Length: 300
Image (cartoon, rainbow, N blue to C red; front, side, top):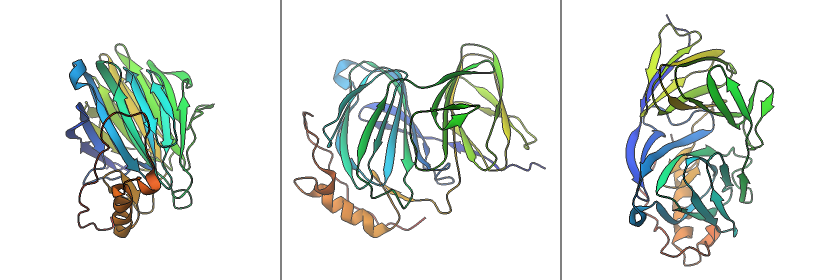
């Protein structure tokens, strides 16, 4: 029998600001992979100018938003006064901490990106908000795949993108048939998130080959020391990893917290004319996104 726990997670299909998305996390069966608590695959899509992605000002707290651009351009504005265009091969990291608000507008018809959230640990979730842009990231060959190290360390390389908990984020792309064996940190749990194509995944300690396509995230539990990836045609995937959390955080709307009562307080703050702790996004033309009614929430 297999000694490594494996789960196949089917994504939810939705829409964000007019852009089609597949959401792997959170999911009913699996809410986090390490501190990764939200994973959207947005696009690839070509939208007419009148339907370009446009997400009005909205709040965040208790997390870092991590945007990895593959195709297209998006303009980010936030309540700190940041204004930054995100282009292919770049990462925007917005650490909400105590609270921040931002908007996102597509500047191109073609859009393809991964939008991820990282839950902040207790000691950091009330920190002052910040925004960082990373125009260059370490590149590496991983077997027959071209790799970009988004966050964390891999075989002597380290990404400049900071994290408050041990994390791994790796983008792997192949133009044709490819094979690679990646070493993994045994103390991490991992997720293989397909963006394009199809990949066969063989985790060490698991006695079966798992075929993964877009719309499925393959969860690999702690204890796995390596994984083999094989594809017969052009493919692209993200490998996400991190130390398991003792208890998953509570997620509702754009907030990451611990207690249901926090959500009501944050919702009331955003409903204020001045945005409360979340502030105001200047320069965006259009209304901000209204807070929905807070449902009855339970701790995970």
